[in-house]
Image (cartoon, rainbow, N blue to C red; front, side, top):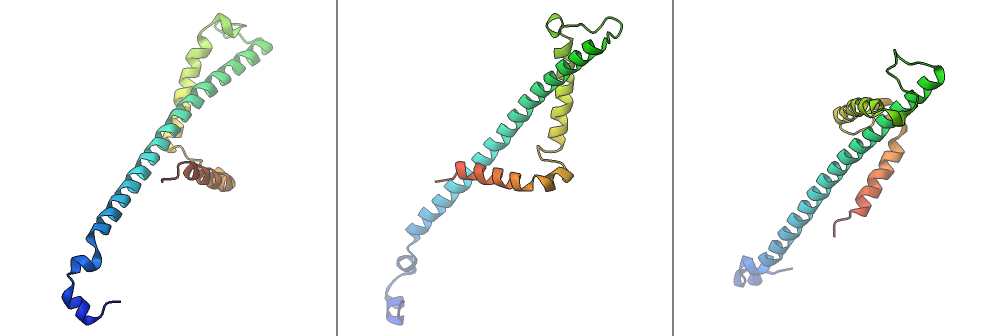
Length: 138
């Protein structure tokens, strides 16, 4: 530690070495910027994943409904074909279902609803740990 004569002879700039604080400030700004960029990147990735899963889920749902309808003999006045390759009805309906699914996910902010969040908490915790471990800021 400094004694009184050293404090009188040295300036405060020498004692606290302001150059090291400048380096520390730069490192903090760098890490905060990287943390923000990684957070934005993960949010955009979750939007893309939700959109893709909504499209795939909507198409799977409409094609399954067409198969069930053809097995049951439902034709809805001739509107329903027997084969999904003969029509674009399944794609059109799947876009509507995909829009509804994506808008629900958007309203939920891409989180799991309440009762399921309690059950899936350990999995969500592991996901967050893996997510931030992979994107560790150096």
